[in-house]
Each structure stands twice: as C-alpha cells, then as structure tokens.
Amino acid sequence: AYTKECMNTRFSASAVHSQCVDDHANVPKPAYTIPGICDTGVTAILHPDHENFNETEYASKGIHASRCLASCCTVDWYSWTLYGNVYVPAGHIMIDQDLPEGQNKASYGSVEAAKAACEALGSVQCFGIYDANCDGASEESPVELVASPGLDLDQVNESSVGSCIYHMVLGSGTTTTTTVAEQCTWQLNISNSKLPEGKVWKTLTLEHQRFDEAFRFSGCDNAELPQASYCLGIGTENGVRVLKNREGHGVGTGSCCDSTTNKVIAEKRISCDGYLDEYTKHSKKYLTSTKLLRGTTYTTMAEAREACLRKGTKCWGIYDDKCDSVKFLLVDSQFNITSEKMMESVQGSCVYEKMPVS
Image (cartoon, helix red, strand yellow):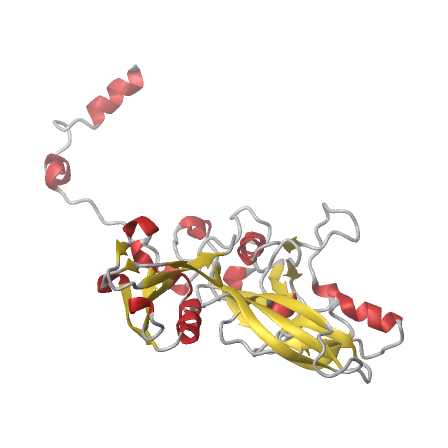
C-alpha cells in the first residue's frame, strides 16, 4: 500500500510538469523500426541459447551476433540451390541415431519435409538434400539429408543416373521459380538385342515426366542403382544399362551392361496432371463458345486429344461442332462442366469429357 501511494504521488500529473505528460493523448507514438540486419536475409539463425550461437551463421556473414536479433526478421532463413548430376557417397548422408543400424539414414518421403528438417537443424549440421535419380521424393524412394561439413560441390563426382542435391545456404538468396506445366505418366516398350527385332522385352511405366519428354538408353551404372548389384553379382563389371530422359536423369534400367543392348521401340502418355488420355462421349450435346478455350481449333481428333492432354487440368474435354470430325475445340475446365449443364444440340454436336485417373 505504501509503494502504491508513493508511486501515485511521485508520478501524478499534478506533481509532474511535462508537455509529454500533459499532452499525452495527442503525442504520436514512435513507429517500430525493423533492424537493418533484416535486410541481409538473416533471421533467427539458431536459438540464442545454442552454444554455437556466436560462432556460426552470423559470423559467416560478418555480423556480430546479438540475442535480440533472434526473432526480429520475417524473411526466409535459408535459400536452396539445385545442383544436377551429383553423386553423393554414403559417407556424407546424415545418420539418425534414433533408428536401428542399417536403417538409420535421415530420409524423407517429400522434398518439403526434408527441407523443413534440414532448416530446423541449421547449416551447421545439415548441408542439403540428396535426391537419387533427381525424380522427387516418395515413401518408396525417399530423399536423404546430407551432413555438414565435408562436401565440396566443385569436386563431387558426376552421377551416372542424373542424381542431384539441393544445397541449403544462409540468407534469402535469389529464388528462381520454374512452373511445371505437365506431370505425365508414360508407358515405354523396351527391346533386347537378344530377341527378334521389334519384340517387346519389357514394358516400363514412368511417372512424373514432362509432356514433351524423350527417352533413350545412355551409359551404365555400377554403384548407385540397386539393379546394378544383380549385374555385378553375375560378373558384369559395368553394371546395368540406364534409361535416361531429356535432362539426363536416370528413370529406368535395361539389361546388364555387356554386349546386350536395349532400345525404346514404342512410347505413349498414359495420363497427365491426373487425367487419362481417354474420353467419354456425350452425343447430341452443345456448349456455348464462352465455355471453350480461345484459339484451340483442330482439324483432327488426334491433334485435339494431344492438345487437351498437354493443357492438363486447364482442359476439361473436346467439343466437336456438328460431330462430323471436321472442327474440334477444347473445353475450358474453369466452368465445371457437367452433363446436366450441357444443352441439347439440334445439329447433332457432341462433347468428349476427359476422364480423371481413378
């Protein structure tokens, strides 16, 4: 009670003569200023209580560490750079001590999950992410964390199957965004020189490939692919033949790398962006021109089907004016076309609905 009485007396408006106090309601409050440090791309690099707080990431930027900087910024902590055709030996892969020996590589079923884990560890411990074949991550084929330090990107061995590494660096960096217009599933028929010409030796189904992809056998692998182990086991020192896409990424394997050769003798797209190259026909139906994609007129059904598949989710289907196979137009998917929304056609026009992957 005495303390409260003292404060009320000492700091009462009647006892203190100050323009700031007297005009308090009209005095503008100072604006919060974000520290200039934030312009460098630095955020909360390590917890302030971390034993290496003063010696690591801040020092690499020539910045004096300060605990008050640990939460002042809103920009990204790290940026990522993709390096292609990189082979990372097993000795550089991070080990998760909580997992059983032999199954304890730090691996993730998605690239985003791996990035989050690497950023949480910080660049002191995590160098980046290794993606064998550079085909993305899945539970069956996960990506792995690369431990820091020890990997010199200027001195790494070239991958025979197009593997890649996502390198994590301090700061926001420069981000380049690549929009992938199509993600297609291809079916390839492969030949074997030991069989009669034109006979199919095996059929491969390849997911997550570009619409305009090209495939060919190029080179051999005896270190990175599990199929190489079989070939080495039967005495083929060069391992297994590698099927690569346009970017040089390994997407499949052929026969053992001896005198036997392989070729792609047939290929077709099964689906793109979740839609099959298959259509359901709605006869005697009509769509107004507002439901069609501008500048998408084709003279053959084959051309229209290829164009619709190329556009992925943007193309709902194909409209055949008068259903006489003379003029085909693509249907815009943004209008959520259903059979109930189609009008009856007096000219006998028809609509082909592109079917989704079930």
